[in-house]
Length: 72
Image 1: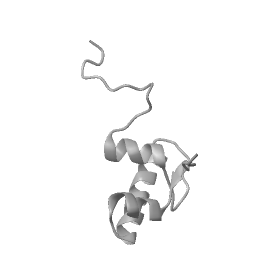
Image 2: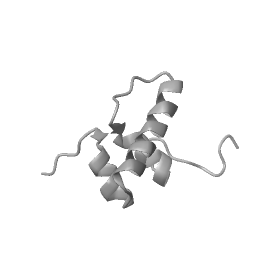
Image 3: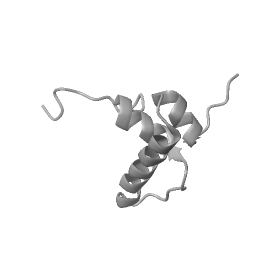
């Protein structure tokens, strides 16, 4: 069984997005800044895999379905 880490490192972001190391660090800093502004504790140089997937791919948890008819 493959273990999936909760956090992504700069290498993970580089491989996932096929970007340079400096670009990956900029992305991590941006995402961590957003999380910090929302009141979350962040770890420099790492980003939440869940938040990364939400921001880049619009992927949410299975119990958080996105609906076009929200509130209707």
